[in-house]
Length: 384
Ligand SMILES: Cc1cc2nc3c(=O)[nH]c(=O)nc-3n(C[C@H](O)[C@H](O)[C@H](O)COP(=O)(O)O)c2cc1C
Image (cartoon, rainbow, N blue to C red):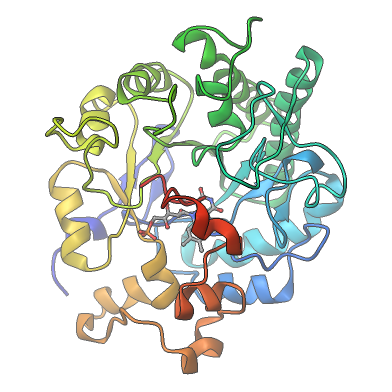
């Protein structure tokens, strides 16, 4: 076995040690039951990938009913989901991997059909720029407070279910990002305004989540935050806004920062003259205050080691982990030549892959919605 840096442990700020630097990032497979309960197929999919990585982040789970963003989505919106979540945590924690539940609200990035007739919500009554986006209802101040509480309650359920942590999903243009974005947040109350005021919603969720962790005495519980560094909307989030946000996040009671990108080595989406890599600008801004997870088109051990060499603490491997559930075991066994990089539909059962995720992998059918093809390349998941 080669002496890769990514095989070494990493201690998080709360004292928990990850056994290695490989992370499975949150990947929705749309396998939950209609009400958001974890399904047997979902447990099978997770089981096939468990045991090896340092940290295993779950498919995203909504924190309330209006937070649902697609069919087959997991839910952490009610105590009745705790038994299912507990099964999930047990499967994901095998082999001392740390199991993290990702939690979110989709905000305006959903439809009234998905919400069974209810109107989507957002920071302001401004629709997204995609054809199918509807006019959202701007959350009232009381509803904003309730949503923050809904996040804290989802944290409580994750703790009771036995997860090792939660990741607050502030990326990929969902509700938390909608509050940070000047495109979707035009509010004039305490939840909107300049860049500092637009952080308030995210910071309040982190604060309440941390309070919940303390209240339950879950000292070893991991609290992570995921963000997307830029938007192409006008107005929209620019890298300077994100760097200011990162500076504030670095001083919050968090255990890591996860930067969502489709390609780890990309530069600015908006400024063609910018020569610096976005991830390294974020790393510099953090100044070692929080562990950083980098993600985006990392496939081979060499890809991951390059990220480590650049000082990125943890590397998340997404699509490649769909194709090769035993990636890290193969590296550890010195069997790198056996790592699969292409999905073979004949292996579906062995890989625990089911439609519609399998269709996305084999036929490129956009995921999680068919009409994501119209999204100008700005995929629901990839912030490019
Ligand atoms: C099928 C699929 C589902 C995804 N679901 C989520 C999700 O639930 N939450 C999230 O934050 N990102 C999600 N993502 C984005 C991934 O976490 C990751 O950022 C992205 O795939 C880029 O990494 P990769 O190039 O290694 O695949 C998803 C990506 C894919 C391919």
